[in-house]
Length: 153
Image (cartoon, rainbow, N blue to C red; front, side):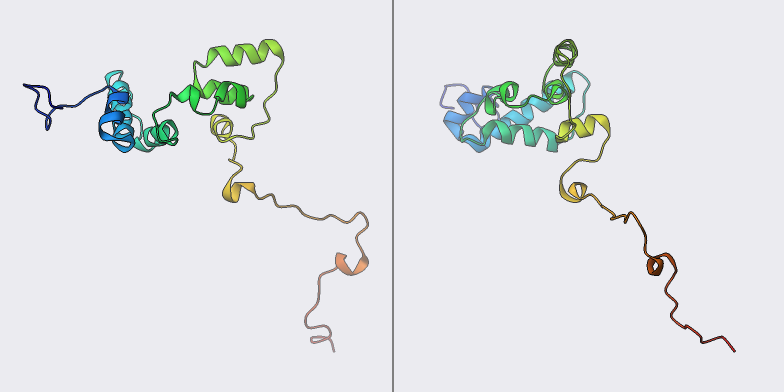
């Protein structure tokens, strides 16, 4: 920022670590968002900023910039083939899962989104269960009459 001939107000760095060391983790987070966005746009992809913000949050939540694969050890921690496929090259995890006969229970958010099933969070966690008696009683088989005998002569 103090280099002779460099305008500090109109110069943008794409060195995330340098930005973190110089300006702090919040500015590094913003830099991550902008860099990913510009890279995707160069390839003709337009992604909602909220997805990029979430990715940047995961990469900076420790107070330092960490590579996305190092953040939570996704490879080791998540054994779901579909979750692995959503975070890296799709073919490799799916091929390995097919060869090894692995199953996926569709319990995670990524898996549910990929398969179009309801996500098991919030109101999606609730399942309605109806109790069915094996032998219905006589009283429950006929409707309750509110005006019993009201219209009989």
